[in-house]
Each structure stands twice: as structure tokens, then as C-alpha cells.
Amino acid sequence: MPNRRARVLHTKTLYEGKVFSVRQDRICEPGGTVVTRDIVVHRGSVVVLPIFPDGGILLVRQYRHALGASLWELVAGRLEAGESRPAAARRELIEETGYTARQMKQILELFPSPGFVTERMWVFVATGLRRGRARPEDDERISARKFSLAALEKMIRRGSLHDAKSVGAILFYSRFWK
Image (cartoon, rainbow, N blue to C red; front, side, top):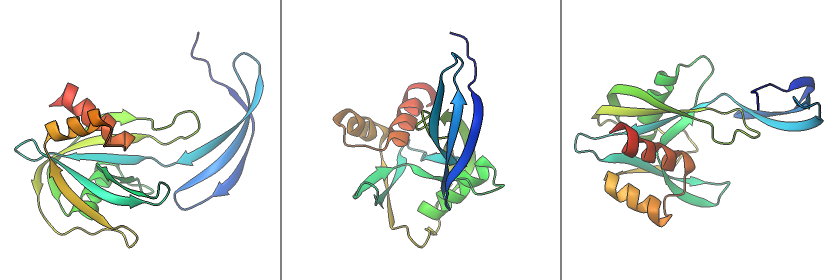
């Protein structure tokens, strides 16, 4: 099937918030069917794989209210207006862990939920780590811990690492990058 785009007939904003907005599009699909789609509009985010010289990977644990649970995750956060992806990755690494990185290399682009969310996630490998003081946002309670790649792969196999962006980034790194 050709990669043809739908034609937007009408669009309206339903919600505008600090982190995302929601719009409703009335579209004509390539086959001629007219449908309504609700779209979450998100500026995008970065995901950081902080890698130590011994191969260890730094994860953060934080409470996620939407799930009512604390999760182990890679460092991540949204892009600010006008901010470059590498700058956002460096900012998030410092805020959440206190670490700075000599090198920050983009290795992957992910679409977390392409059926109705515009968000793209850019995954970076951070090396040449140097410890500093974390600067979490006022509403963030974060702890950090270094894991071996083998331990993370075991957590993924057992189903105890639940964060999708972290699972995808770690497996991509393990299989194709390191």
C-alpha cells in the first residue's frame, strides 16, 4: 500500500496544558473514509543512557502518579521551547542525577504511541561521566543507582523493568550499539 497521507478537513484544540495539548482532527483517509482522530500534541523528549567506564548504566527511580507506583527508568524529560536535543539530554542528566557527560551521542529515535501521540523520543548515550549535585525539579523525588547491563537484561527478561522507553533503549544499546 502506498504511503499516502490523510487530508485534514478540520482541526480544533480541545485542551492546552503545560506539557501537552489535545486536538481533534476530522480527516479524509487515503481510501476516502472520513473519520475523527483525537491527537495528543507533545514537543518531544530525550532519553539518556548514562554509561560508566566499566559498562554500568545509571537508572533513576521515581514515583509516577499516573501509575501509582515508583519505577526504575533511564534519565528522560521533555524538550523545552527552542532547546536542542543534546542540550535537553545534558540538562536532564544533570537535573535528575547530578552527572555531566563529556560525550553525548544520539543513537535512536522512538515513537512511544504513534497512533494518537505526536511525541518523538531521542535516545542519547552519555559517556565520560562526572559526578556533581542533582537539581531535580520541585515535584521530582528521584534516586539513582548503577546497574550492570547483564542485570538490566535480566530485569527485562523477568518483566521487572516496566518502562517502555528504557526497555527499548537498553535492548537497542545492548544489541546494536555497545
